[in-house]
Image 1 (cartoon, rainbow, N blue to C red):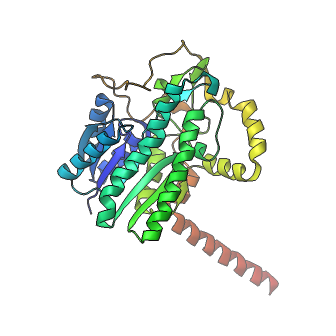
Image 2 (cartoon, rainbow, N blue to C red):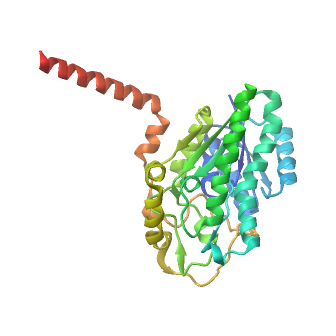
Image 3 (cartoon, rainbow, N blue to C red):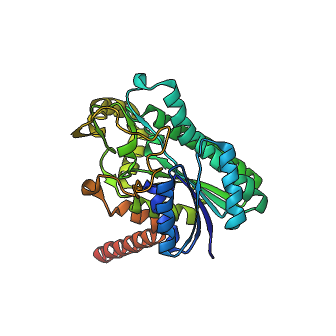
Length: 334
């Protein structure tokens, strides 16, 4: 069945990679983001892969704009089956060096953008009794790190409101599902256009994964949305387990390592161009694509991601191995 899919933050990074995969499925894909050059590139990706694209320049921090975009999607592509919230903004700086306006803007994009997207999706899905919403979250929504207080706070908030909405849908016996895919560090272009006050170029905390790899986990979450959340990547699983078992020790560890691990060795030339207020892919020739500048240090394969997408196969193999092991032990006893 051909699906109608909405992706926010679709012009680059994870959103762009997710759009490419849905294009290969022949889906009808609505692409929402601010940068028009990035949106045009994403639309080409979808259509070249065999899908149908609708590019809608939209600021997710504007609820009315999201509602207007959702109306256009349903008018031009049909009823929305899947809504994926991905849009991202951040400031890399100590909390005391972030202005109130900057903190508010990150919160509006990274948190309220997800809230408004979920509102727009539910307003249409709930009356039809079916649909799926995927929140692209982060390990940093469970375990915060220094220098990203606004982003981490927003990702924590996404978990809180999504959990509440999930309970309400379960109470109502709704056929609409909502789930969260918790991401590891990903090689996206955002680290080249984020507002940074660090002395060196910002980077994701290693290990770093390619967006095309984690995008497959997002599609898997959309295909199997009854699960509350999915941990994408071994580093996400390790981080969240460590947070549950030894959060105070992690505080001290990150206080020692969190500054260095988020910067390369390259000196930053002061505050360069950044996209907090205006997109940097709003001019012809400024499409940044899905990947960032960390190709050489990014993973293209992830055993944990593969295992999460093939849970039934893994469980079957584990059962078979267990039975084989039991048979060996029984034979030895005999």
